[in-house]
Image (cartoon, rainbow, N blue to C red; front, side, top):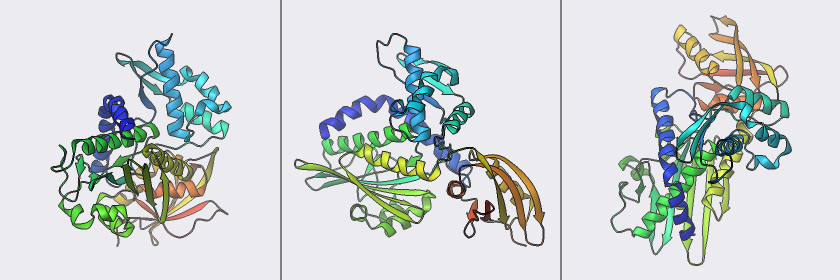
Length: 377
């Protein structure tokens, strides 16, 4: 596994800059607007490197970009094997809004999001919008021989403050292994459109969580330490490698659910998480009319916050105000929503602006919500 990861590290170093830039953009957006859902930047824009020697490098770049885009949006790992999606790939150039060479052998391709989403809707395929769960990753790597390291926002750490340059007393081989694991995680996150971040592993984190807590894992302890980050999900990874075999174990905490996955490859765990997200947040089919009743809307600021948040959601095609009950502080809206109520519920919860207030009513397509932090009178 180590030699394979070293090869992967070499192949992916060129892509690390783009991944890091995406991560910075996500975190900057969160800092600027902490009450909004995490948005994967440039979801419909991809930078690809087609096979050298292709007869038509531009056409090859567009084909490859469309394949990767369809994986990001529909969750299908091999869209070319799906006869319906293969038709979109064959006609990829008609969906391109911009393409050009970034540098030698690398192309930037941007697609019309609305046209692609309409095409997917007509085919009955899931569409996973740009609002996506921000996942906080607690990753412990056991390289054998008593060496165990953690991945941090700055680089690599242990049960001491994270050190981006490496760790005193940890072998260069273990540091290289950890860097390769991180590269693999970031590459899959870019491929699947996953907003991710790592903990700071500063004094506050390390007073609460140790490598042993991650390894067990003590989920409640990790959850408590994660609260400061405002993430939508927590992924706990335990990766061990030794001469007798490799082991990768994952625990995903999302909402009130806790799921586990075990395998031999780091990438598979990230793909497993992405597949679960597509099932939870992907909307299928044409839009339907839903009614939203929002409680604790007391001021114009409250009113503006609700509308601004809802109008920015890709799951909603339109929003109309039906009325306002001043006595009850209830704002009633009618929306054109993509997907069923369960998907809309999941998506609305990402921004921490609105909180579902009781079960939804499928009979009349109504959701009752409460504005988080709404003004009281």
